[in-house]
Amino acid sequence: DQQVKQNSPSLSVQEGRISILNCDYTNSMFDYFLWYKKYPAEGPTFLISISSIKDKNEDGRFTVFLNKSAKHLSLHIVPSQPGDSAVYFCAAQLYGGSQGNLIFGKGTKLSVKP
Amino acid sequence: DAEITQSPRHKITETGRQVTLACHQTWNHNNMFWYRQDLGHGLRLIHYSYGVQDTNKGEVSDGYSVSRSNTEDLPLTLESAASSQTSVYFCASSEGKTQYFGPGTRLLVL
Image 1 (cartoon, rainbow over the protein chains, first blue to last red):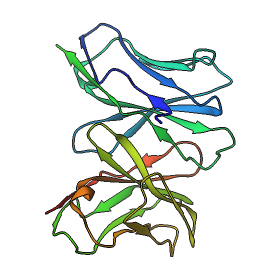
Image 2: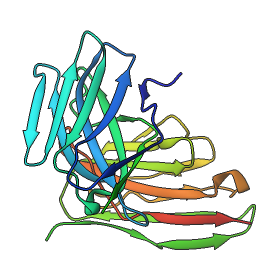
Image 3: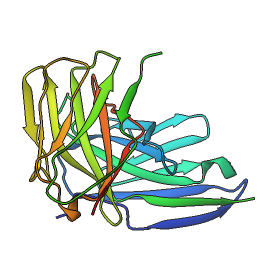
């Protein structure tokens, strides 16, 4: 049973526009969420995270929103750039899991067209 | 700069052979993890360790083992390689909630 779901395998947007990547989760015991970006032939790199006590976290062009009642989070990239083209993974951590065990979604491939 | 490295980056082996993938980190992190990435599955946890002499099974641990004799290294061993273990393997380390990943090892089992 998949606890972290990224229902869109791919997303295509124009350069300069907003990219919105979505992630749903089923376990209400998750209390920390992360987004990773992955380029081909490289390891995932940490992008941004959010604690369940917040509903928004912003870092430059990247903002993550958390809606706990809907068990939904989203990553907004504004403005999108061609270099943002990559696979984005959503990950979640259980409450009390201080040592970093993460559960990942299957990823969404973002393509930003010039 | 501190980093995490994996070797080899590419490996071809035959069914039934024992294979060991290396992972080395210089951050002095206590927590280390091994994942495999397959199309349609995302990243799945194989084994993890919270410190020297500590090892734990993850979601897809069958056919794999790890050992932790020091802080820096967590080698992953495929006891008898199977074609189903053809995948890309990632090692990660953390000292808290954020994991940092190595560049990956692409393994092909023929």
